[in-house]
Image (cartoon, rainbow, N blue to C red):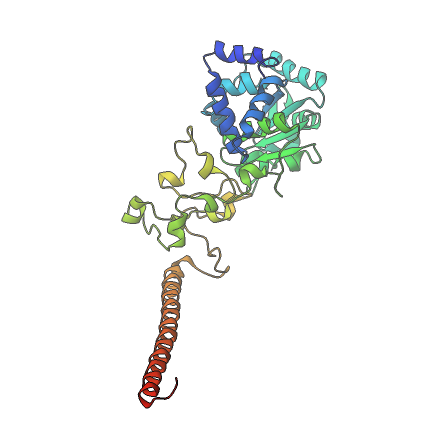
Length: 380
């Protein structure tokens, strides 16, 4: 790495980023990607020696929340992402160019690097009124998406609006908003990074995985990378032990809430939401919603605004206890289960004692018989 990547090392030093900090970032990426810590060295070599992928970022029917998340990335900083990992050639919010110059930059990437760039799409794509609900430079979002995504090596739909249609696609959907997959079917290597907003570390993780292994990460049935969406929030939640013990927050601010009990009764959708929030966290890993005492709203799942509402009421089914079960009965079940366990343990111990007592009784009887035989002069 020192020979082929010496320019990269010098550039890091010029910007005050030590090699130790850089290797620390690679270690964080290996954790995000659910790889062994030893993979950090391979990641470091890939980032330092390979050509930075060109990236164009399209914003359509959105609130810019994912851009805000991207700009506030802490591990690494936005500057690290842009200058060290990516070559962001088009992003309306952060690029210096505007108007015709900006659109010329996008057209140049599409024309000069077919199949050699990554497209990131933020926001849903409106199709109503021939796409008139969202136009940029006189062109509809639908036309831009078809051209740019159609020629990309991969398209990353970042945020729930781009991945699943989001709130704009909720009924009655007057703009005809669609997800990227529905608006531009058949595009190559579509990767969804849903959440509201998506975590910037997962975006960087996809890029770093591509640089390291020359392919994009494995996906689930919703085209979400398994390293970020392969396990439910419930599986890794720091309050899971309280869930298993039937200890729940009953109302905001009660003793259980202050103690850190499970938020299931307060509407937490962690058992049916798949994302790595507990592992990656937010604000440089400082905390995350459940850690702050707020239930998960399921924002990484399709149609969460309908399927997960009301947000502050618990799910009708109790995971692991059947779809018709209710969380309010779990205390009785838990108590009965614990009582049954103690009873079973007691019966086992009692059985052992009976068996042990029977053996002792047999030994005593044998000794008594031997003594009687000795008194009679008979061999034992």
